[in-house]
Image (cartoon, one colour):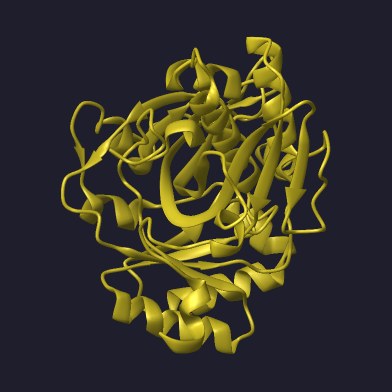
Length: 322
């Protein structure tokens, strides 16, 4: 592994010694989220769009520690991020305080997930803060109530409260836990071009290109993941069907993203696609060796790269996968 150790995030055993040495509150891992396919359906009366996607937690994560305090404060390892109300983690603490009548807290946030990359980093941090505060509370709200609160913070927060593998519908808040038919032993190579994409722009462009036409949810991808309710996902059938409605639009205006996708496709992955509205693209591989080969190729092209694995099990009330 050598010089690439800091880019490997497998399972739950990644240490963050610099944070944990100085912290005394609950430690929560805020896992990144991949969209294993993303179909955008009709625009709703509330201005949001209905979507259909398979959300998957991966082992790439930020780390959150929360301790009690009189007021809400936040310190972050990334100086580029706001430490105040503009930060979703701060807003999560404020929302929890409003709901419970509790006091403030100090949040320590160690960032690893790239911001604005379609990986749900901000949502994951907010969900981790909610879980940490609930572990400190004398009368905890429970994960179901936290997920309800999370919907007020952002569409991805309810998923991030529990994580795992879930079918997402509505604007992303209607979730159905799913299981893989075989052990989820794949490896993901995440390529994060430095080309942030505005989600609002992506939705606007998609609407303009469709010229008001509504999209049904009868695509092969949509039918496959919808049919998995109450059963198991067949990865071999899913991989050839992965599609992200935003990807052609993003690659059309971001050549650096299109080039990353092309390079990934040339590494013989099981599948490759884009997460969220970008700009992260990813490849899926059978084993670590194949993932490492792809990592070397993309890193040689000077792309930021992370190698990680699925976290297929949801989080229980103690903050750990079950």
